[in-house]
Image 1 (cartoon, rainbow over the protein chains, first blue to last red):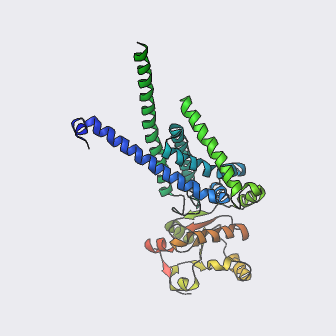
Image 2: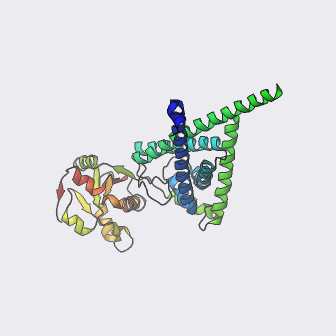
Length: 169
Length: 161
């Protein structure tokens, strides 16, 4: 902590927010890279995991099961590098909401199904409240990163337009 | 907003391209044999789970039957009152097919539960799937928390046979 930030409580808050966002991006990156890589090695298992929720017709289970691993790897890479970061947070948040919906539906129907989050790696052997917690965490972390990335982008936009005005004057 | 959606679209498109490439690259990819994937999806049957307490009530009222799919020795040592011992290995056809069908034929309740130890959830699930697919049961469930949950709840147990 610098002396300047001690003098200005706002500086402390901003620094804490910055650290929280870095941690959130790192966590999301690790989660998505691990999930995508593990599922990508066994695409058929990924398709069957989607199908085991008994919510979607076969063609959606196949399309989603094949597409998910690659999307998750790109999301993880985006969280690490910052490439299309705001779009990535929207996709990860949306995925988190969809997954949470699936898990809630499995809990409500007393369905005994593997969560399928990390391919064959049964971290949570059943889609249950622990799995739901993971999905909610993904949504919250994505929201945190989106808010920060959006405010930074807006601030940079304002700065650029004010620089242009000064330059014209 | 439009820019964020455009970025999201880029992420999804890149992800789908990567996925298709990976699926074509790995052995056993889905695109190589879509029909096989569809067949496996058709064989997925919904297995449910039931809590030990709800199962106990169901056993008393006759709406549930309980298969103790642990080993015979474990069953003899201690098992839920009213359970029938069919070790999971018996579901590997065809060695025990005759014994299996005679024991299962005696179970008449509309719902059937499979109990193993908590850590053997996958095996219990496989037995429940076999009951649905191969033995004509309409509703099968695994016991939430396994035999440990039954004991923890203080529900009645018996020793041999």
